[in-house]
Length: 440
Ligand code: HEM
Image (cartoon, rainbow, N blue to C red):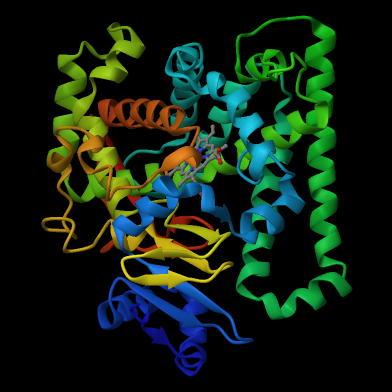
């Protein structure tokens, strides 16, 4: 059996400040020195296995997924803010929820939502001021939140309630980042009442959502939106989802579906600003497909260039930049053994930039996806892989294709920054989305 190279606790300590700011260069240096799998000694006799071996990722996420569960980051730490739903549950509970919710995210069902998405996107873009430098990220962050709101609740939810919900979702994520980055302050967060303050915010979010559900049920109106779908779907025994479970799932859809998409869109526009020839290609494709005169779904499905750009953007800047798992029973892969309970962290960021897996790995070349992303399914994981793959991947792709084509068909984008900066938190966030827009 092969010994897995180790990075010592001393080295970890030496780099701890740098890791707190941005752990990715530290990961990269160790991958370069130790190979595609190494274990990091993080003290107290515990190790984290860091991997950029795509075959191992496929093995864990797909082939032998039954032996792997999510880490406590999702199944414990996040649960206290958003409850136990699709993203955060395990075992039978997860299986039943996934089976029940899958139809609401089918392409056919999403057809009911795309016109609402387009209207939301167009109205959010009214905030873009031309011929001056603006930070696009807040606009896109609002856009993706509002898209989820409209897809779930059509027009039924009050704007001020939704603003509050957005505030709470974002505040709780910030608190979770603090807890994960500074675990040694856990006692202080509890003693000082900081944690309770955030848990109270979660309670407030639940009360807001309960109000929305009560109103929908009392109105008897049908909107064919995600909420109607979730209210109507049934478990195998014919029962409906409980109200508490439904609230958990809605909070999770907000958490999983909003920041990831706004990050991906921001990186995409930054890349487009640096590569104006791809803006022109998207614009020409939009024109050749008849622009807004063509049926929206038909145009989305035919927007191949736009799709390639989005795939390449998520290769270079995957919003979900790591995926972690813990093995239940001992396992072996390529002469390496893993005792039960190993924390294994797959760096999607590193796999997507691995020079052995990608030609000109660090270059923006959307044409590599000309035959679709399936060609790279063994090494490209922006939405994860296996049974726990993102349920919202079509939702996100449709939304992003509309968002990119709406913007590129109206504006030319210029960059007002040197390099694309990143802030790796729970998701990979953009840093300096300073852009300038000119009417086309
Ligand atoms: C560009 C946008 C998005 C990216 C990059 C992304 C990425 C991911 C990834 C990597 C996972 C798997 C995590 C793991 O295996 O540990 C995941 C799961 C999930 N995503 Fe997304 N996501 C995006 C958008 C969305 C949207 C728009 C929604 C909902 C509307 C959504 C809802 C979910 C849910 C509910 C899960 C949990 C699925 C399960 O465990 O069965 N995501 N996402």
